[in-house]
Every structure is written in C-alpha cells, then in structure tokens.
Image: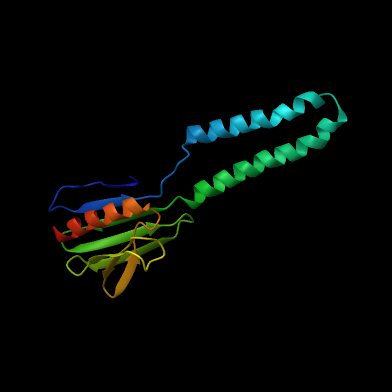
Length: 160
C-alpha cells in the first residue's frame, strides 16, 4: 500500500505518510526508453545510407523525446506526499504538492473526525478529516480499496 505508519506505538506520537502509487520504477523507466529507442531504429535499417534516413530520423527522434517528456511529466505530477501526525493532544496534516507548495491543517485531536463519503465525493469512498471548522481530504489519490482501509486505520488511530 502506498501509505505507512512510521511510529505505530499506541500512546506516542504517530505519523502516517501517504503517496501516490508509482507503477514505473526507475529501472523500468530506463528499460522502456531503451527498448523503445531500439524498436524505433528497426525501420531505419533498410534506409541506411540513403537520403530518406535523414527525412525519417527527426520524426523518430521527436517521438522518442516526446515519450520521455510525457513520462517525466507524469512522474513529476505524482510527487505528492501527505503527512498526518497524531500527537497526544493534536492532529496535523501537511500536504506537499508536486510544485513544492505546502498545505496544512491543524486541529485538537479530540475534535478531529474522520468521514467517508461513499458516493457524494469526487471519488468513491472519499475520506476527509474534519475539525476546527474545516474539512480536508486525505488520500484522494489512493485506490478505492486503499481508501476504505485508510478510513479504518484513521478511525482507530484517532480513537486511541
């Protein structure tokens, strides 16, 4: 699961880290680009030594660099980290966005509530934290099953 508790001892300060799932690890990224480059070169073999090679080459290179740009952009857009800290007296949620901006929410732990919106949120089983007059989302980038599990974990963590 793309979230974990860093300090799971009951009674002490607990910290939950959440991040989007990254399906393409760095090794897979390099292999995919390398294999794509090799396969793009296959149509160039019959035209080696001819003028046609220079006509096809820019388009094939543009395709390869476009693919690399799209993969890099996707990776950058998914560099999100949410950190929920539950202390003895307060709860603090901080979200670090891909552009480096930070958003935070702070509330007395005893007033904090976890809510799950089964159908009326932007995604099914939308999980929010409520307190101090605000409602903030948590883990919206998780899958539906992961959000259901997160809701149970947060419910038990805030009730301890």
